[in-house]
Image (tube, rainbow, N blue to C red; front, side, top):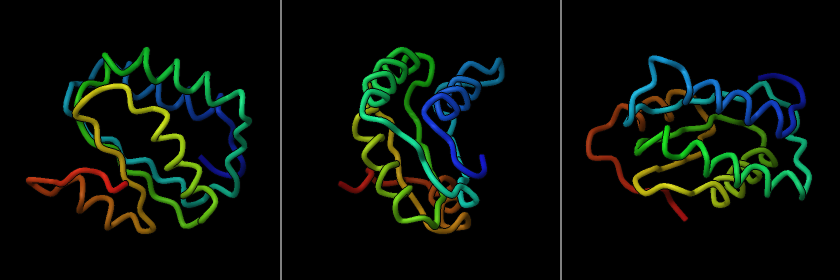
Length: 116
């Protein structure tokens, strides 16, 4: 994703990942949005996001998701959306400023819980 994206693009990408035939429970997701300039999310989009994530949570199963961004506003928005999207036990979400840190966290054995 590049430029400015909204909730429609975010959910389409998420849906595509977890409904892909190769998806298995326990897979990790790395989303690099470091070229994204803005995240255009309206208040009413949050309810849609919650409902969609709830629907897809059973397909997703437990696992980890890392988002890479260098934009402080996107970092904050991603954390807020992640809090709203926690629908299944065993899913951990973290936001990173560098891709290598995100990859290392996803590859690490005995990973910890997401920070509050």
